[in-house]
Amino acid sequence: MEKTESNETQPEDKPDVNGFIDKINDKLNINLEGYRENLLSILKKKQNKPVFVKDLFPNFRTGTKDHEFLEYLTDSGLVRPLCGGPWKADSTIILTKKVRDIARDHNIPVFPLVFVSYSHKDKDWKNLLESHLRVLEQYYHLETWDDEQIPTGIDFKKKIIEAIDSADAAILLISADFLGSDFIRHQEIPRIFQEKEKDVFPILLRPCAWDLVKWLSRKQIRLAEGKALSEWTEGKKLSEIMPPAVEKCFASITEEIASRLKLTRYAKLPNEKNDQIF
Image (tube, rainbow, N blue to C red; front, side, top):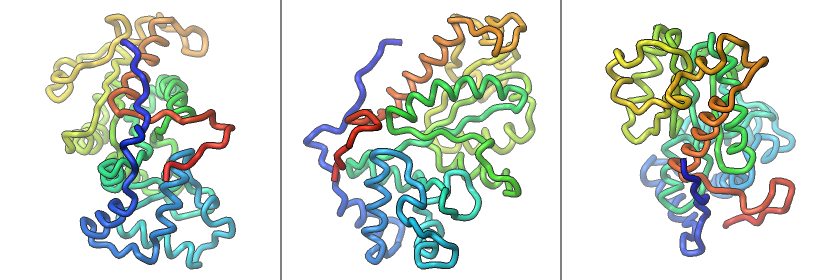
């Protein structure tokens, strides 16, 4: 795939913060006047890195006004913890998809969220993919989510559906185990394809009769030089061999995600002072 230049915010695309707040007040019927500065703090932090609760509230405690503020935004459908569960000091705050869409309409760059759908039997492949996606997490505005981020004791089905609904895009790691999973087939796939604007990236991990599956056969599926990725490993473990064709496939997917989601590159290196955009 031909490399594309990153889509950095142009000077003429000045963020319209007041318009963004007014739109939320109007579209979601929420009164944010008492929380305007708090919400702007989340947006400003999101330009540089994911924001943790402790970044905004160093002395965060359950039952305090800080906790009530986050609960209010959560109940209003504006934010949620990235990994689910109750709000804690080390919870990552993520804006919901409808709020991210409103922010983009007002030229405010926010982190897209990519949902990774896979069979647990393909966990090693998922981990390898995410090592490539980490480049986008470190140097661009992107967050990824998979079910390993769900805390112990949490309703995993509810959190998976919640993550899908919040995602801007989904990566599907295709194998016979993936296609044979009742939960993936009946719960994840219908939700992923429910929104026509959600970008979907199917990758064929292992040979299977994917072209007999109606919803998948209509999609452009990603191969490694014309083969399923596992065909390049010749039965060896991923830790023992990593063929260039497989690396190129994941690298190409990473570049395509950056292009299709129009990711914004950090203006400076992560350890340098990065000026806020508003």
